[in-house]
Image 1: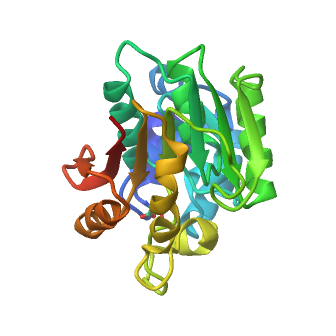
Image 2: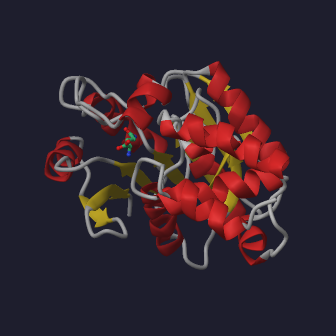
Length: 274
Ligand code: GLN
């Protein structure tokens, strides 16, 4: 038996990355089957058997496996989402799209929501969690990702409001959607990434061609036929891509602007139709 705070301190000192203490807490909570905050206020010592299981998980983390993969879950917009190696681990930066959607639709919920490249379903499910009468469609080219998204919808009680479709972006989509959400792969091919990302997350959700802008070249010209008046399309993008995207949106006939994430970096392209 060992004091849990001593266990956490020792573990955190051995972990890589930017959040070793938080990672140790999430892993120990997982081992003990407790919520992280309950685990932190708990006083019972950690049984040897649990310490041993914790050690196994720490070794995986030391080999750079993301905590979300080890525990099989990641919180996004306060929703617990199942995560596997078939989907991008939802990032806090992407919550900027949901915050912007809430601003746009204050007091008048979007009836229909489209999520292009839905992955785990994070963006669509976060939107549907805010507007209980809204329904949506999530499209992905990965059947494995869609299975994860559908499971997430079911677990969160949104199965009846979310439809999932295997497809190539918006190809074949005839309907218009009040809210379009999209976090495409936007990293330039060949960019060196942290081992946590490079070794464990799906390349198809990360790399967007030689300059990372490939998906936007395909998608921005589609926005006009997908958005009704009053609608908005929100695209996540990466560092230094904002000006090129605003210009690209303009070339497709849209006035566009960008919105920064919590760290103040331009992160979301906003295309609204009057
Ligand atoms: N934000 C992710 C990263 O930097 C990239 C996700 C994406 O390409 N959509 O790891």
